[in-house]
Length: 382
Image 1 (cartoon, rainbow, N blue to C red):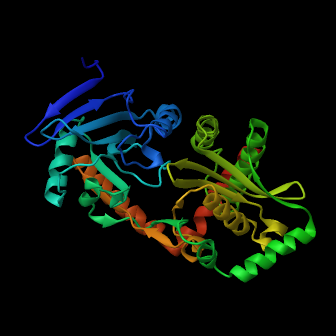
Image 2 (image 1 turned 120 degrees about the horizontal axis):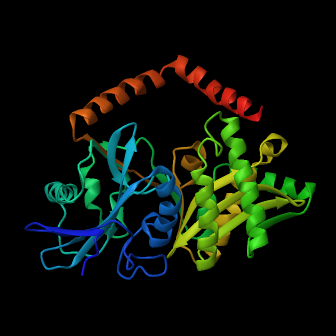
Image 3 (image 1 turned 90 degrees about the vertical axis):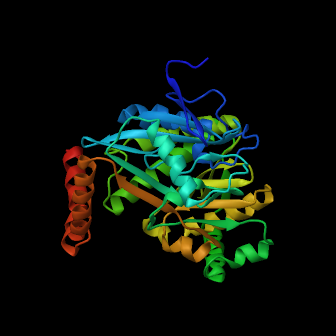
């Protein structure tokens, strides 16, 4: 029997069940079965997302199951309707927590084409409340070995890609992917001359707390150095990582590590595993005098070696086209997106957004924008 928060619809090819709360049988990190998924769509991740971003932003979550005409489960997709200045926007359950936005996919005989993908999405939209805009972003073409049908809806490429390191290669080949490797190793030896150097992996709560505290401090300092909003302006990411640290530590899938020099944590990394893939979701490093030692890159090299020794096949460094990713990763994953209006209000909002994007691209705006956050922080500090 369906509960009051669940509805069903059907057409000739697909039958849909829409849940208002996360179903109890939604695949988890240790219970994927035959499902293909990224960490961002697992039960544990979505539970934390709902408890932090979902609550704080008043999101209307919808978890959609899609079955074929034989009743076989084809995919499960977590969606959310968000109000953005009075505009109702339908998208993935994300709010900047996910590097990949995609359904959980199951092996199927369906041969996905753009036409069939559009029919699928039309059925999904028809089963949901009316919205002003649809924004499907950060969509990979594949999830594991399954074609992602929603990627076929994309009418544009995301301006940034995801990047990672293949650990199935011999270690010498992995090392060779690191830019200026000889210089990096020389800097590592230089750190050892300063004081004792340790690659630290947190194994208990006190150590996790120590590393997470430093990581969040380093991240906040980076926000301030680059003059962008930080945890004070947007506290949900901090709360998300605090909760995720405990959840994934309990399941045994968290790796919180650091490069320590003489007791000082000069670089930190927060990763979570799903199967043979490790997802790096947050990194931090000390600036100032430590910057010249490239602590972040040394930690990355140590972590790659550690992850390979643990039997992992891939380290995913996530979305973002920073120079260090282009220079040190051997795998680059393009992402697609669809942005479409579904009402007159939605079309006006897209036109306004396009105009604002042009303004924000001007040199004057780029020059003045950082001062907004400098002034705000100064006022907050009194």
